[in-house]
Image (cartoon, rainbow, N blue to C red):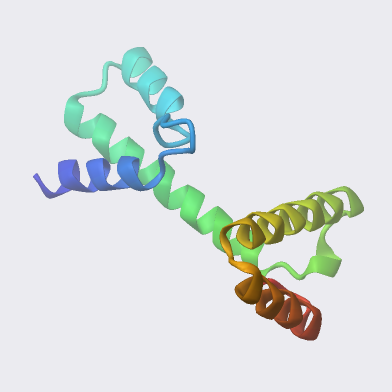
Length: 110
């Protein structure tokens, strides 16, 4: 039963903004269909896929900005800019000024 709860937790935590399930849900369902997986096997496969995603993300997070290809650096810079813009939208004027000051001082929005 622990595995089933883990799957539900994993799926809930990995829902995208549009409410769809975790990124590999379609792959897991296709594998289950193609190989005739049991419910338990399907749940275990979902956990394996989520763990891989977590490990993959950790590898990318350890990479320095300079190690990324120029195209990815541009995408990351644009994503960071959007993040800052979205944060600024939820702040009041005084908070926004402090946020902007911090961003200029340390070069990040975090």
